[in-house]
Amino acid sequence: MLNDWINKHHDVWERAVVHPFLDQCADASIEADAFNRWLIQDRLFVLDFTRFAGRLVQTCPVAHLDTLLGGMVALKDELLWFVAKAQERDLSMDVEPLKTCSDYRAFMRGLYDAPYAVQSVAFWAIERAYNEAWQRPGPMKPPYDEFADRWGNPGFSAYVEQLAAQADEVLAGADADICRAAEQAFLDVAGLEERFWQMAFASE
Ligand code: HMH
Image (cartoon, rainbow, N blue to C red; front, side, top):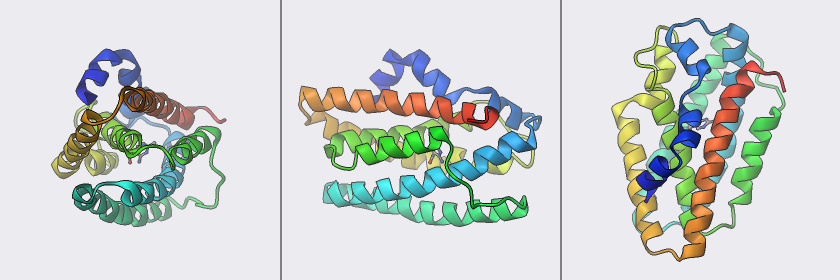
């Protein structure tokens, strides 16, 4: 199901995972301001995403807990890593979320009471987007190789595959309305991902 959606919505998905922001990271030509804006906003995003992960932990079948809790351990590390990266760059973390970042938070909060099938598709799509996006341009020049590796490493790719298998499994037992809502959530994630890259360049 999930792979069908990636094919069916090919153009929408491509715009989520291919962006000049990433190409400019790969050849290290990205403006510091743009990169730093992304970095600080992405930390805020991951804080919201961590809360969303907590909702999935509440609603998922027991058999899915192990993968989700593994993901949360990775998020714990990632949040500390974001603080370290911000400090290395002397960036203030005391900033307000920009519009796209708050829209993304509102989207995730809007799924807090959604059926688990919809939540699990959105959660997978969010992780899959970064897993793919950071690998697409090929090897990145320092210091951006570290960022590409965080979301492009084989362990993270395997985690994303597990999330896909779990989401596919619940979708297989879901009715048509829930499948439609899940497909819409997939499209919403794709659109928000595209906007998130764009946000780094445009002050909102
Ligand atoms: C915007 N999407 C965005 N940020 C992230 N860190 C991820 C996905 C992956 O967790």
